[in-house]
Figure 1 (spheres, helix red, strand yellow):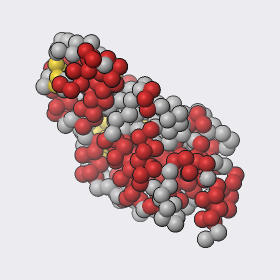
Figure 2 (tube, helix red, strand yellow; figure 1 turned 135 degrees about the vertical axis):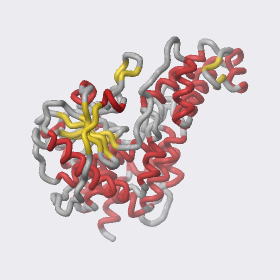
Figure 3 (cartoon, helix red, strand yellow; figure 1 turned 180 degrees about the vertical axis):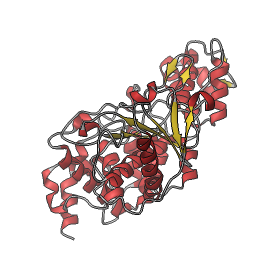
Length: 394
């Protein structure tokens, strides 16, 4: 999603001003080596039948999409960037990400193996392409793509209820493309290709790091589906690197939990940024200042008003409330369950008028307030300050 440039913060696919820690002490030494992409076949954005993936690789990753020569590889990280950057930039970036990746994993209660399993080795572009191929069967319902054909109950709707047919086809295509194994995704795409064989559809089980040459504070870094994008150390020096990178890596882990084959993740912005801030810093604005902002109204970046730093501190307070009332694992469970569901944004039957309807259903069924009473999205939105005031007075 494209983010407005407001004040000084990190922006991108998922972004934040979070991470208050400024300590980069006790970094574990990391060794690696430079590799030639022409030899290994590993690229930040491979040539997929003349198309270079963009949507999931970061708004500011152009340098890495254009770089076709070399990258720096360590145990868990691949660092890409312009050939104009010094070797030390790649080495420093790899050291930072290798050291702070475990912190983000711990904060999200995930192991490294669980993260790569949830992200899978299929590129997001591959899953999205599979979705497009399956959904295109709406115009040729008697055909198939690879081993996939339209289920009989949905096929029967084609002659009897065409509107439901289109809606259910969309849901089915999203579900199959989101949950299929990487091998099945690749084989399905190649079976449905008009000509030739698609290559470059898979990812290494490593974090893909992109170094940019952007000097502006406001677009220093972003968390992506494949890893993290940030300014090369020689281009833009920042304090609090530990917190900044860990914050963006939390966003990367969030996407592995919630992003489906269409690119939808359907959680409100206050949740995503509040969670990343709180999990990294462990602090929020004082409860007594809750009346200064209403984070529950910020579903997307378009809803943000005023100073972005103030907004983020209130997102953190809202998330902190939910975590203290429900526990972190319950919130993570909601995120995981949301990915397993399918939301058709074009289906008027499910128009909630605000947040995604399935997020609302999960929130209403899973969340409680500080007293253990059921909490709904409507109550959270309309009575937010009452909940905060009661919490502050406890």
